[in-house]
Image (cartoon, rainbow, N blue to C red; front, side, top):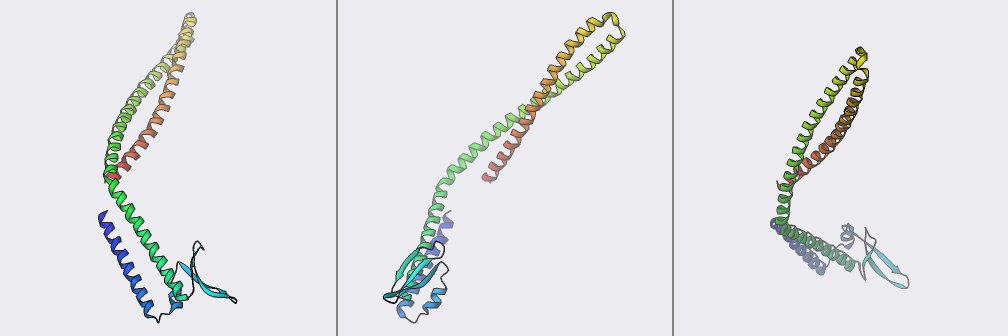
Amino acid sequence: MARLGKPLAVAAFVLCVLFCGFAAAISAGGQNWDARRAELDEFSITRVGGGEQPVRFQVTDRVTTETVTTSDSLAAAVVAAYRERTNRLQAERQALQDRVDRMAAEAPLRTRLNKADRTAMDARLAFQQSEFERLTEELKAVTAEGARLVDQAEQLRSEAATRAEDADRLASELDAIRTDLYRVLEQIAALKDRKVRLEGALARAERRRQQLTERLE
């Protein structure tokens, strides 16, 4: 940050020297003021007045159309425009230097905060990864249980068709199994929904950890 401030200070010094040289040249006379006026990109200088009113030269900002100053001669107007440009450049340089100084002062705090965020994010990501793996295993177990219940229901349905004397008992058992199967299927759907949400949370956490890693680098 300090290295960035030095070139800015040098640039400001050079601008001041150039402006002083320009002012000295003005005092020596012989300037082509129309050419100097044409070199101004930021300002326009126009003749105002005339007739009963004295002729004056108005300096206007090309962007905001605001009047910067009004002078009695073209030379004075050009000098005022160049002085205004120099003042603006110096103000911009100072604002940039203030920003550089502020960023340099905040850098240690930002580093500490980023490290703390990274540690917390790593812990959160590890927990979510563990929870994701646990839900995955639980979903596998519940899915296997559902498959087993489906097979059992098919067997009982087959027995009910071939053993009429046990039809009532088997039908009752089949209804109970259907109830259990419905419960298991709802549990599977809920677990799948939780798994999808957790996958999204893991993806967001991973992106956040990558961002923190890039900041620390």
